[in-house]
Length: 179
Image 1 (spheres, rainbow, N blue to C red):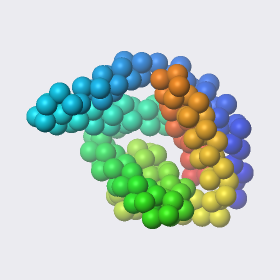
Image 2 (image 1 turned 60 degrees about the vertical axis):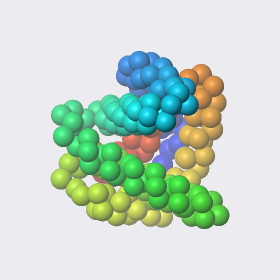
Image 3 (image 1 turned 90 degrees about the vertical axis):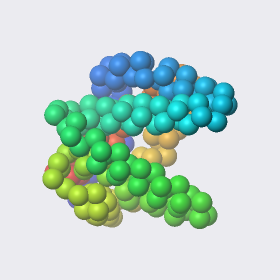
Image 4 (image 1 turned 30 degrees about the horizontal axis):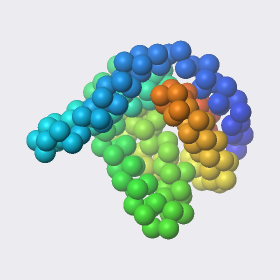
């Protein structure tokens, strides 16, 4: 079993942070679209749709760059479906006494990476593979999520710039345990 080095993955993530400077264009758009809600019911729907589109494009770009994958634009719709299902599972799990949400978060955190790395895999198989990658590593992966969550909480105060670094840190862990 490969060793998960949380410290090394975080260092790797922050070294790769310069690759994500394009996000400075997306972050103001996300905040702008968020603050445009409340204008009218029709415009709220438009701004919410715009917010979701920008959010998913930015997320796709971050994961793509974290894995150093090229020519994966055709996977965008599968990525959006998979990550939406992941978010829904985590949300539902958190609604049921928090612990199930944390378990889901730990088990399925590699789904977006698997979708982008193993291009021919289906969404269901990606969830299954993520679960098998997390097997017997739950405690260490939970520790990783806690540390990355704290980093993102601190980074949120400076316009969420740590999120790409922590996704890159998870990509480092994924690459380490998937090979």
